[in-house]
Length: 356
Image (cartoon, rainbow, N blue to C red; front, top):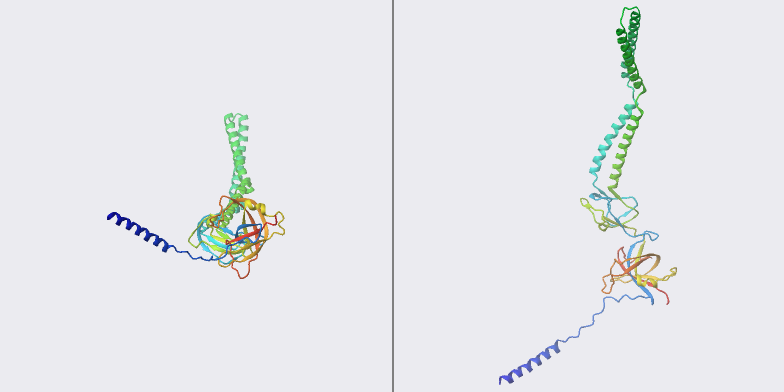
């Protein structure tokens, strides 16, 4: 009895399982695509990822990552996102108080150097001449006196009234008086000649050095104000007063670009480069926007940059290859007035490869 009951329950369980599987099989509904797939309009063409960048006139654009010449504390920021700036216009300023303090000390040293030159040019001092002139007169009188005594002593020695020892002693005194007179005359001549020329060279060199120190500090202070390298529009601002500015271009304080025109930098795979016609004068190409509004925009070739580089800009597609190299092909774009496009935006670029 138990044997048949077990078999019956197994058959019933199998039937319930088959029914459950059958009833749970639901055919999913077809979900329409949010937008049609982007298809290359050219029969034999190249499809590439394009990144919008500022044109800058003449196709020499690209965004400019503005960084400080040296790291420092941000004191002021003069621009905001969207501001139009001209070449050499101040963008932001770093704290320059330490350099300004050094500049004050350097400027204070200039008058001292100038005073040394003025003192040299004022030589000789009028009050220093009379004492030396008096010393010359006194030395001359002393010499004459000793010469006169020597003459009398020599006459006495010839008559036997004096000794040779006295004569020698007086001659030494005359020589000493001559040396003293020569010494004071040399001092007077030196004083009347004014300053020594090599001293003036040293003083002028010192003044030049002081001025150079001031000029160097003023240059360093001017470098604390970061200026616009060219005219353009502020696309991004990443600093505020009180923050620390770095010199790393990947962490730029400001991003600048000329939005008067836009270029498209297409990354053509090295394997597709052979499809690019040698004669590009009549090259046809177009850019297609992505997202909710898809628009085809004609583009004009500006240049082919003949240097293959590793692929860095990725779209995120599952079939996208990263182990490849690309060649940049730059196009000029004239976007419609009713379509908002910004630098850094990705578009699809299609290039006509011509007939086989």
